[in-house]
Amino acid sequence: MAEISPRVYWLFQSLVAVMPYLLAGLLAGALVLAAGAFLARFLFLDWLRPIEEACLLTLKEWANPILDRCMTAITWMAQGEVTIPLLVVVGGILIYYNEAIAAFVLAIGLSGSWLLNGIFKSFFRRERPDLWASSKRPMDYSYPSGHSMSAISFYGLLAANLTNCLSIPLGITATLAAILTLAVGFSRVYLGMHWPTDVLSGWVAGGIWLVACLEGLIQIGGL
Image 1 (spheres, rainbow, N blue to C red):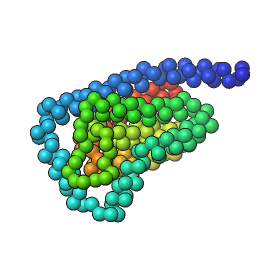
Image 2: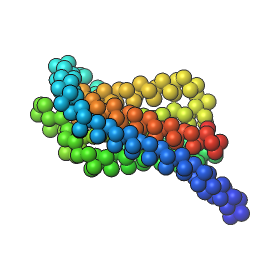
Image 3: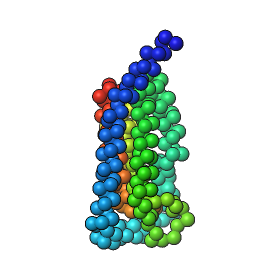
Image 4: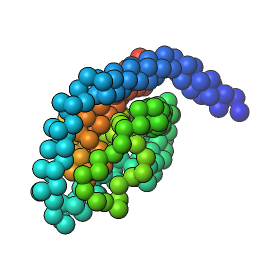
């Protein structure tokens, strides 16, 4: 017990030290999403809507069964059915390498993106695109894109931690994370699940949240 207690105390102290960065990241992400919602609803609605509709309809013209299956597979990479098992596996690896705080922040990073997404979907209540019939379209609201937020924050943190713990070059992990993030966002628009501005806002807010999580880890020596 005497050997465990110092570790538990250190973990608690680390979480306390990183908390200001996480709170600042959540606040900054919330402000960005609020600003985006205000601009889209009250200032640019008439200008943006035709552009977004044209974008979606153009992508629909490109659609084919093979591309549909590829985009569906890609979009799943940011869903809980994939990210939660990855979190468990990578979290276990991080704990094995005595990086428990990094594992906690990885879990907090994923949870934080879900939190921001849930709050702003309920607050803004933007309807999802309905330009063509689709039985796969979710029933909840559109703004922001939770998949885009989760992709950039979760896979960004994953890339940094894999580089730190397994010495995989950052150029490789960061590039793969960026490609996956862009692909997930594109898939959401291609499948008609989101407006382009939903995805852009999700990327920006998720990117801010990612930077906050990384900065917190750096400050406590977790990266």
